[in-house]
Length: 304
Image (cartoon, rainbow, N blue to C red; front, side, top):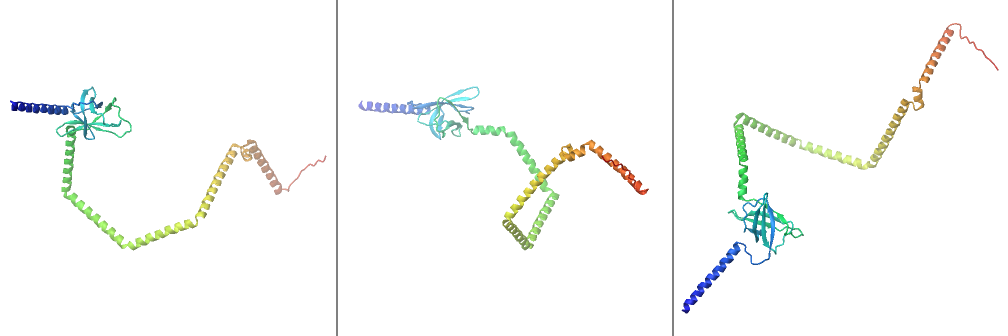
């Protein structure tokens, strides 16, 4: 009787411990916490690509929470994350939905950030989907037609190249061109080798000329500066003279100075014409008298 009770106690204790272990395993799997040291935060994603409630939340790869709820909106998805309150997150933290394993599981990976300001858990954060194998396959499927076109173009180009290489005329011309190029290179090398000393002498003379020019400049630097300064002064004076001459001619044209007045006054021009006509008559009269009886002077002198 006593052994039977002992056996029953052992069986009961084993079942009790097993139930406690099972409960703890289920609590761990369902992210059940017996403490209140956790924080909730909301993160908005354009797509979560299969993220489910209970999926882990990791910070730099270390599990520190879980997805407690997911709400589908018209244009986005709102995920509610529960994380340990001891975690310090900055306002520039990043939230990404990434692959958990090759079987297609998902998790939320948080990068804490480096800002000096703490994150505000009451604000809705913005996350992104980092992509996985399925999205990569979908992307490849979307460009399948483009890949087929590229392969066809490559095949066409290879066929064209093969046809070109198989053309005997082209290959002969190519060989001749390469041979001529090789011959030209050999001839150029020979010319350079034959005239190496002359080229070296030419380079030496060029260097000497440059040195002489530099020496001449160094010795006559002050004189050259003076010549340039005087030349600039001469050019400035010439410019002023041209301006004055242009102004003087303008005044003549507009009749603002004496020469302009003489040239532009019609009365002076008429008087000058009259004087020339009288001079012409007087010259004609003197000529006739000299050719005839001589100069006849008829003068009346009055004294008063």
